[in-house]
Image (tube, rainbow, N blue to C red):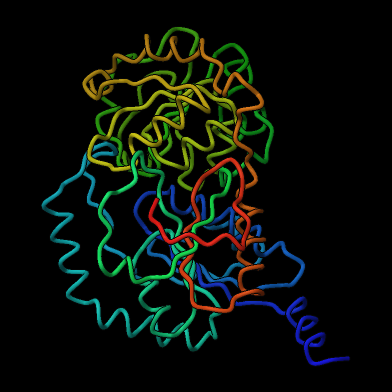
Amino acid sequence: MSPVTQNMKEKLIQSYVFCYYVSGHGFGHATRVVQIATKLLALPRHHKLYIISNAPKFIFNSAISVGAIYRHALIDAGVNQPLAYTVDRCQTIKNLQTFLSKRQDLLDQEVNWLREVKADIVLSDAPFLPCAAAAEVGIPSSIKIRIVNKTPSNKSKALKQITRRIIDVPLVVRKFKNPREMVLKNLGIPQEIFQANKVLLVSFGGQILQDIDTLNSPIPDGWIAIVCGSHTMKGKVLPPRFYRCPVDAYVPDLTNAADVVMGKLGYGTCSECIAHSKPFIYVPRPQFIEEDGLKRLMEIQGSCVEMPKEDFELGHWSSYILHAYGMLGVCEESNQRLSHDGGEIVAQTLEQYLDERGGNFNIDLTRSSQATPLDSSVAALI
């Protein structure tokens, strides 16, 4: 057997060490990571995968159950949110300044750890420090960037100097596992209640919910509501016909069990509403750059209704719920719908990339209806 043939054979059976860094801000980052990590670990070559995050371990249970190794570490500053749809800018900046003051120590820590575990690639959703650590170690990095509405017109000098490969992928999205009846029964909702009522899911991606307990009767007659994030309201009594769910509830199961979903425009919620054909009511977050892009995604691929935060806070929900319930929840043109196999495509692409890697690239994985061929490299920003 020639050396070239032997080398190709070894590549086909080689397993890799993936180190996946995940922002601890909100749950949307984690939902993408769980899906991609699960698909990477399902590949037949028995890769090893670490998840590094300051987000709670339970969010990654689906990936941990199939072999992912969780490591808690401070890897980004996050965003300070007093409410699910507001940002404390001053505190966020202070937190970032504190984080950056420790940058070198944190960078050294990650560089040493990556060498210790013999990492082959750093994946990031989407803290910046791990990519710098990967560059120090001399391994590639891949960053999952957010959906935005416009391409930035100005590129920094540093970004221009980076060789980047940008690969568009379909939606990376989790799907439900358990049937509706089982999910609702496990929440302690009597069968005669959920069979006689429509279900509203209130889900703000793990962010703080405030003053829902003070609302009198915000939902229409013939409806019940399930509240994610009610663990932030300990000791408070929810309004009539409202039910709590556990902090570690599998949200795609809840989404599938609901008739309408209410929350914020976050990637995890939007993608899961689209995948399960659920109409979505959102409270706007104008301070977030991805807001316009995700709104556009929902308008094209799903169904969405905007509820001003004033109406949300006052409990004027009923008209929005009834409006949303009359919507389809999915793109009407079936041939225009995005596929939902982004996790599989990302996993296969990353494995193939490491097999074929001849240089030190940074990969951007972005949302699209189809995957760009691996040999198509583009130097650009999304």
